Image 1 (cartoon, rainbow, N blue to C red):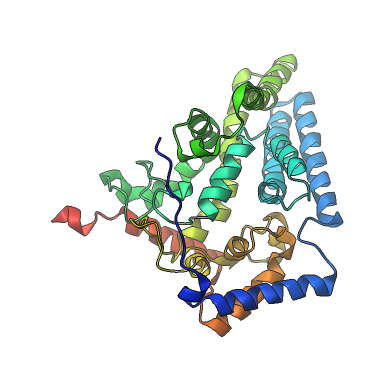
Image 2: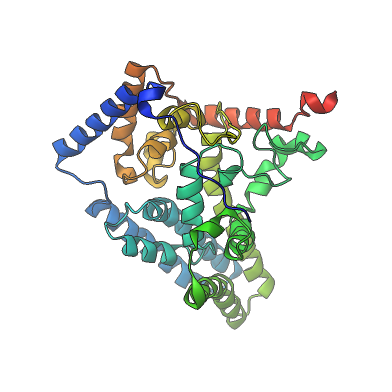
Length: 370
């Protein structure tokens, strides 16, 4: 795998973004200073994480002790659902080193909370932070939109006839995303077949031991022990396997329904520039490739880990998500003053925009009709 050469955004002074950048950062610093606060999780969010972890453990133990099929299935699905909420609320911030102040602490937290889901947190972190965040919606660089032959996610990817229906079948494929990340992406990354090879993650025999221990730990906790518990209580192994598959799919859908449209709805896509230099600056690029959205009712934000304020997250990746509502107001005000296109959608608008995007990408390109 040939390493990808780095890309450069236009400097703020050259792209006309310097005044916006200065105003944005000054207001963010003032907001933090006025509160006497910091960028990391506060006591309330540490307590929230602990309560979610306790709820996940309680549901898991209920599953292992259940003597009825309905009790087993309900507890198992609840455990994985709460685990996914824990990952949304904790692991995402930990991957950006803003859940705890300690980088090592964030790594340990990430490895623990991802065990039931099966993904490797170190490989996911680099894909997310060093590729998706650095190069959103840039062909070959944003690994979240890399060509896969199933979806056509950008105008630069090959079209196939079945993609005419991708706006209809995407939820089924999305439901398999966690499994795909855990057993395809992670192994391709580990075997050096992706651009992550240049990062040298988990080196040597110790790295292999940690990677394999996490995968085996996932299989033991998510499948092995539930299979043994089901057998001990006279329940079928088919039930335990079905619960595992259903929970992985449900967890995938929960995450995907929060995320995908934020980089698809009314968003721009870019080819990798041949000279390695992008024509616009980093801030304008993020405005063009992401949006914020608000749920109805607003209290649903409690369980979203700030993922709905996705443009704000891209502009402030080094801040814990508890600050995003205030930062989103700062972004909107600063953008209006400096002529940048801030977008904040309702959830129905987001889904409509996502469906429109998939339908457009699923149409046969004009050049292929010629």
